[in-house]
Image (tube, rainbow, N blue to C red; front, side, top):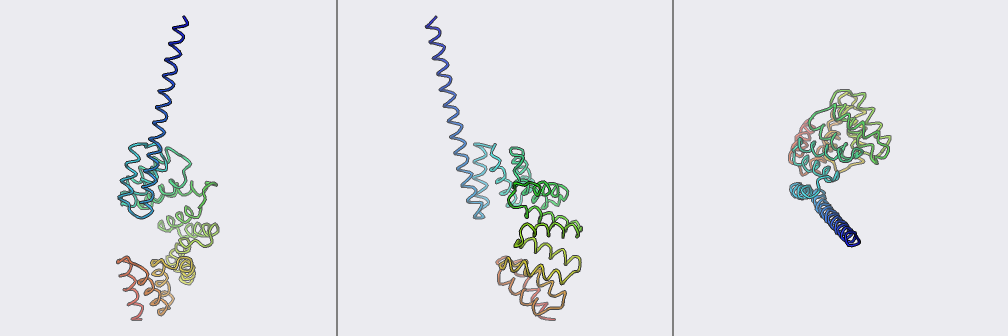
Length: 254
């Protein structure tokens, strides 16, 4: 009887040891996946999207149930222009962690690129109501942009101003509200908003181009010429530079 009990105890101990070894192995694999994910994030931060995607895919093959990794995959695919896969991975991140607001905000941004306005609005409204989300001015600004694209300018202004209430120095909101005022033909207000945006983000060429266009609408051609040239000098993007130089030439001809 004692011998049988001893054998049972031995078997139980062996099973416990095997379970512990298996658990340790899983933890080691998870840590390895996290290390690979961290390397991918470093590449992502450097704008090396292909390398980042390679590391993230490797990490996913080891441990796919990481919401932060799924969010990273979404961001990498979005940077590579594959919006469908970006949406898939942002949704996976939210399935794994339903309160993951950065992933939901990113999903909304992907929907913007797809012009899926209703889905984008749903995402951003959910994020803005998350009291634990540290940067609510981002979803608010995104809502402003969506309503601007929909032609609902009053709603766009409302959300942009709400974003500025949260973050008074946020250049994207000033830039956005300036575009709305241009669409509303409130050119003086547009100039003021663009000037605020330029003050907060003095190296952003697209803002200078919009400011120049607003100056043209109020017949301030010298100022327009100056800011168009400023935009051309700031940017390394050939398309933006070409637009800025063309606008400067038109302003000078006036």
